[in-house]
Image (cartoon, rainbow, N blue to C red):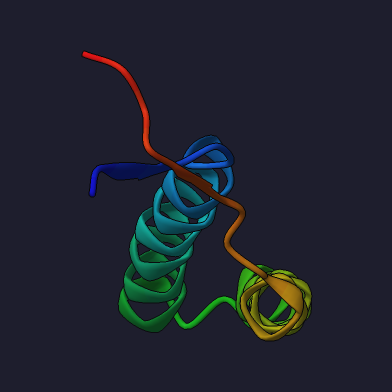
Length: 64
């Protein structure tokens, strides 16, 4: 049986968002910038909600 996820773009978008947030948080710590830090934390909450709400959609018996 073959299968694939039909909504694979969503996890990729979440992963990209998390990478960007990682860079923002590193920058905020380096520069001691509370505004950037608070902005990144807000975006992190939103990303966390996306991860919690993600439900994979699987297509079974996919043709090659």
